[in-house]
Length: 484
Image 1 (cartoon, rainbow, N blue to C red):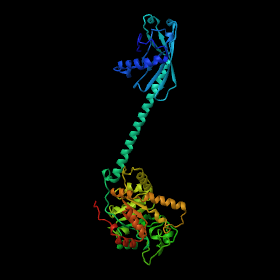
Image 2 (image 1 turned 45 degrees about the horizontal axis):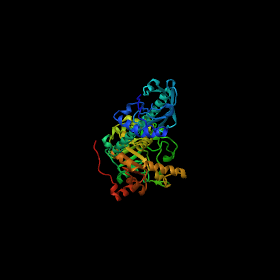
Image 3 (image 1 turned 135 degrees about the vertical axis):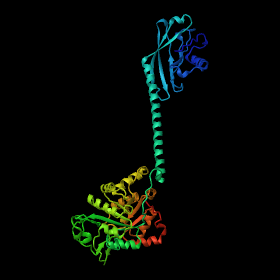
Image 4 (image 1 turned 45 degrees about the vertical axis):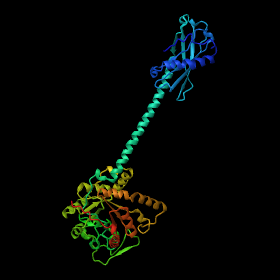
C-alpha cells in the first residue's frame, strides 16, 4: 500500500469536514495525481492515498480520502471511502472503515469492511504511518465483482465472435449457392443427351388414336413428334408388352391382368377409349390395329425415334428384359426410362447406368427440398430428365375425374407454385437435365409450359401441339444434338 505523510500542510483554518474536503480535494489531490501520473496506475491494485494530519488532535479531525481500485482502467471502478478517525488513545486504537463500492455496471450498494491500524509510535514524531488491513470478505467481494465483469465481457466477445462466424459461414454458403446455382458446371459435368424433344406424344397420342398401339405411334411420328412415351408390363409368359394398365378392364373390357396372362391370350383393345387427361372426351378408332404390341415391335418399327419408357411394376424380370431389349436394339442413347417408384428407379440405374433416367416421385420431392434449401447446386444428380405434371391443369375441371373442394383446390395451387419454378428449370437445363410437363392438351397450357422454361410438352393430341409449335417458332427445338 502507498502511504503519504502530509503532516504540516493543513491550514489552521481547516476545522470542519467541508474545509478539509475543499482543501485536500481541490489542491492536494490534483498535485498528488500529477506527481503520480507517470506511474502505470493500472498495475496498482488497490491504489490508494490517505490524507492525515498530526498538527491537531485527531479527535477533532475527520479525515476524508479517496480509495481508487482498478484492474484495467480507473474510470471503470471507483471505490469511495470515508475514513473516520476519532480516538483518544491511538496506541490502543483501531479505526473501522466502510467503503461504498460504485461500479459503472450499476452495483452501487455493495459494501466491504476494512480495518485501519494506526501506529501510535509514529504520532510522537509527527508522522502518521497508516497500514491498510483489508478484510478477506472485501477482497472476495472485489474479486467476485471483477470476475463477473470479466465473465460478462468475455461472454459478449464470445457471442459477438460466434455471431460474426455464423454470418460469415451463412454468407459464404449463400454466395456459393447463388454462384453454383447459376453456373453449375463449375462443380458438375453437364449431361449430354442425343435428344432434346419439345414435342412428346403421350401413349402415342391417346386423344387421336387408341393408346399404346403401333398405329398411334406411327401417326405421332408422321405428325412430327420428337419422342414417344409408353408404358411397359410383363406377361405371364415373360413377354414385355406396351400397356399402361396391368388390369385390362378399362382398355380391353375384360377383368384380367397382364402379368397373369400369356401374350397370345391377351384380349384386343376396345375401339373406343376414354382420354384420361381430357374429361368427357372419347377416342374412337376404326383401325384394325387393336392388338397390344410388344416392346420389341415398337423398337423395330421406329429405330431412330427416342422413346420414353415408364416401368409400371416392381418386377425384376420386367426390368431385366427391358434392359436386354434396349441393348439388343442398340438404344441406350435413344431411350430414357424410369418409374414413379423410387425403388424401381434405383434398380434401373443399377442394371444399366448408361440409359438415361427420369425422376421418381420421391426423387422429385427430394429435388424440391434441395432446391428450396439452396443445397441443390452442391448435390450430384443422376437423373437426366424431370417429368412432372402441371398441377394447374386439374383446376379447370376437364382433367379431373371428380369434383374438387376448396381445400383440394388450395393444395393444388400450392403444389403448382412449388413445382412450376422457372429458376429450377433453368438450373436443371444448365446441368443438361431436361424437363417435360404432362399431360397438356390445350394451347394455353402449351404456352405456359414453354414460358416457364420446360424442355418439352407431353400431350394426348400430337396434331394440336404440332400446330401450336408451327405457329410459335420461338418454342421450336434448337439443334443441340450431342453425339456421344
